[in-house]
Length: 297
Image 1: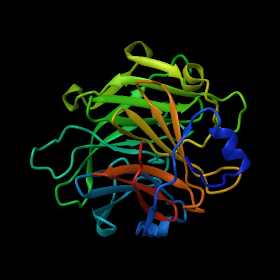
Image 2 (image 1 turned 120 degrees about the vertical axis):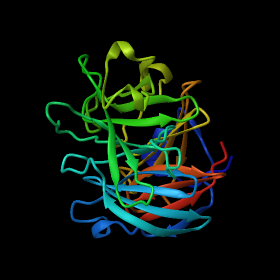
Image 3 (image 1 turned 135 degrees about the horizontal axis):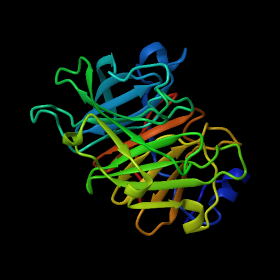
Image 4 (image 1 turned 180 degrees about the horizontal axis):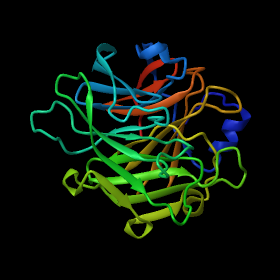
């Protein structure tokens, strides 16, 4: 397998894993969010359902786009019902249920993912119903992990496994600047909307709870950004496009517990945020725009 030249840091990261060959990447253009992604409204979580892309910004600004091939067009923009200064909206993930069967989109799960708690609770997961006319949203459910064992440190992110109706948490045990930091995966059954407006998950409810480093021997320390699950694999775009924080897509096999990597340093000098897909193509939301690529796994 022929690979393009990597930075020294990237090479060290890839030694113990399978590195994928770099695909052709299409830059689809800049995003059209509030304040252009600046002044406290950085781009964050994103997911796609059908041909509608749900793009979030810090604090909970949402923009809906329609995606067709290499083009995406603006549909609407609004504040989520969970909009607040402590909602980083770091990951967005569509679920499996709809409040009304005629809703064009299933409910969306938005990771608060902030170092500060809200009313004593940290890293909440907001479940939002996007209104049928895309004019706003309703907060349908809030999910909280009661981390009595201190499993997670700086921030906890959430992603839905739609096929299996599971909910995964992923995050640091300390923070990405600490040499002792590790990365934890925790798995729950996806709560139903009918389970109530506020759900508390406890450690004893977890179906799985492990550290990636412990089960694989793989060592990495990226800044936690987006998450997406496809065919039993967890896709994690990371990096700031810099030599010391390279843009790497990590692909964690949830069944075999092994890691693949894709070096994307030549794609962008901006920060990667979240990832989703339509058909054969994956779409990555970054601070400098939207990218499309085909990944051969």
